[in-house]
Image: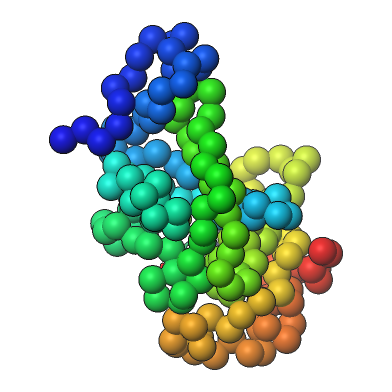
Length: 173
Ligand SMILES: N=c1c2ncn([C@@H]3O[C@H](COP(=O)(O)OP(=O)(O)OP(=O)(O)O)[C@@H](O)[C@H]3O)c2ncn1[C@@H]1O[C@H](COP(=O)(O)O)[C@@H](O)[C@H]1O
Ligand SMILES: [Mg+2]
Ligand SMILES: [Zn+2]
């Protein structure tokens, strides 16, 4: 059973009004999630046909977890659901952008605001271990309290979560 329109011509896909999302060979389409108010990119996850349909029906973000092999409503454990204010599709309709309002601060399961809290060093030659720089590493919630497990209160107090071997600088934002 197909939930969405079949792909048309390039002209129809790029300039038309019919939503005809392209799922990859695994039946998935990537969805970038950004905070609707700040524009901050929060996470990237994948949707299958069912997750996309549920997201559209409920205006809450549903994904397909590749590692768990299951449909997943973001926030089902944490309560940190993502209300979709707008869903955009890119030119060739093979990527989605969800502009969301967060029910609670912190989208990343590590307790950070965004999954993208580290930067890869640029202008480095390939072929050796590249060091990551912590850019926005402070935890805005304690993942142990929300998900269970070892408390992260110490790491929350030291935003860079410093592990001396990597020489991480403190958070810069
Ligand atoms: N909460 C998250 C979560 N939030 C954001 N993300 C991002 O979403 C991506 C999930 O996509 P995939 O499942 O395809 O990714 P994956 O890396 O193959 O596998 P997992 O992350 O699912 O292990 C990850 O790569 C993360 O960058 C999360 N990925 C996983 N979780 C887990 O989801 C579960 C439920 O959490 P809540 O939805 O917050 O209740 C918990 O077990 C969390 O650990
Ligand atoms: Mg991942
Ligand atoms: Zn994350």
